[in-house]
Image 1 (tube, rainbow, N blue to C red):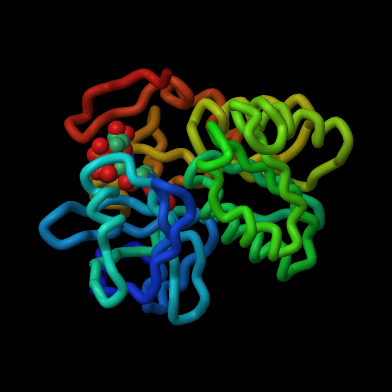
Image 2 (tube, rainbow, N blue to C red):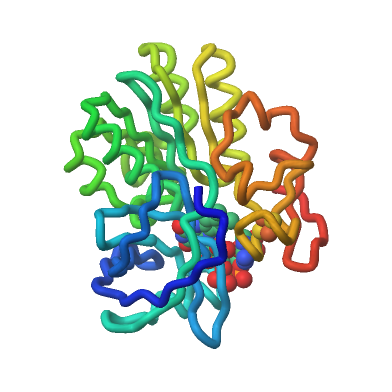
Length: 264
Ligand SMILES: Cc1cc2nc3c(=O)[nH]c(=O)nc-3n(C[C@H](O)[C@H](O)[C@H](O)COP(=O)(O)OP(=O)(O)OC[C@H]3O[C@@H](n4cnc5c(N)ncnc54)[C@H](O)[C@@H]3O)c2cc1C
Ligand code: FES
């Protein structure tokens, strides 16, 4: 793992619309990232924020960004030819195990998991990919995931596509019917906690991505602490068994000023 603040200005090559509020941005740069790692992305004059790497193909890498606030809105306005700054890749990557796995993605969490699924399929690993969203227009990367040869299972809260309900409803059924070598999740923390509990019940290895407010991204500022876990270097990907009893996990996160907030 690189532990440096080395910084590159990178050129945007392509923008793909994923849904009305989410786009994938392909940049020209040999990043050398593994699935689960993130970069600190800097838009000059706006801000710098952590973003999970959604793909890395030699001299290009991609980020999938949901428009939720000031920084992510500025990201949506980027055009091919524009340049942003990146530092990284940072953080622990997913550890792919065995020959049959399940992946559970919520929101932009499906982007780093698509990257992991790509690696898995290259190794001929069977992948059940469960993707959840509030409604069908919030789903992302469905075609890309299917093109890889994954078995895609969709759950929407309003039933507009796939199963009406939560990703955990689908996972519960799959865990009853199959034996997985690993389950990998990325998305809202309470969703990942529920995934971890289900895997524990079925004695199945599970990794999740614990995300906290980040500033430096490489272990210096302490901002990303989660109950004693420095998520930018000891995570963001962790074994569920190692985080499940952490006092902040599934309960508390901190904002830019360090003030505590409870997950709802
Ligand atoms: C490891 C990691 C990977 C991420 N990967 C992606 C990704 O692939 N795609 C994506 O769309 N978003 C990703 N995010 C979230 C992203 O970093 C921003 O939080 C998000 O874009 C919102 O920023 P904003 O300024 O637009 O909105 P704001 O209104 O400023 O923030 C909205 C919410 O985002 C969170 N947030 C804001 N700034 C940060 C920060 N510096 N660090 C962590 N959380 C923050 C806060 O909980 C805040 O309430 C990731 C976050 C982390 C920690
Ligand atoms: S973001 Fe600074 S230590 Fe993790």
